[in-house]
Image 1 (cartoon, rainbow, N blue to C red):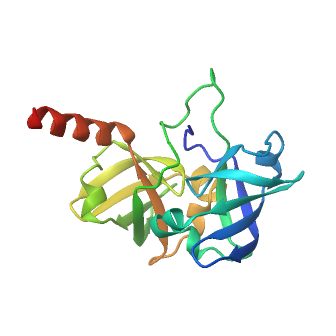
Image 2 (image 1 turned 180 degrees about the horizontal axis):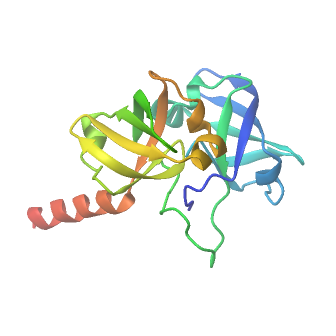
Length: 199
């Protein structure tokens, strides 16, 4: 489990593409400092398993299911990525509960600068947008954010300077795709409601 508080901006060192899979090598000295083989690390909000490790970089395998559901397939050597280790038991949850299970892709429509922040509007598929509510939580490339406005086909978030510089979100341009994970509570509520109706 993650919190969506990004610990480090990593860099993709290499990608080995298979027929329906990929192997990534990612530089991230901080997240590697206490990792071991089999550890989980969230890469742009996608929970991946460490399969190779040294002091400053780690490797991970990405299967077809993950490539089809996330923006990881669009990464290239030199791409910058948000990195987060799982939250240790007993630690503070600074963001919200993030599983690292991406629900879909959103596309940045525009950025509007403010005095000390920027508003980002993202287009979102209907299958995912039903879970997004104003003042609710959402993870974008693994970053825990609060939804400040929502409509059937889009949502907006406001990013403070610390988020713009401390994550890869500040480098986004209109048209860029991002990984989105909605709040798990909304999905459980929908599932429970549907089960009650069928009884």
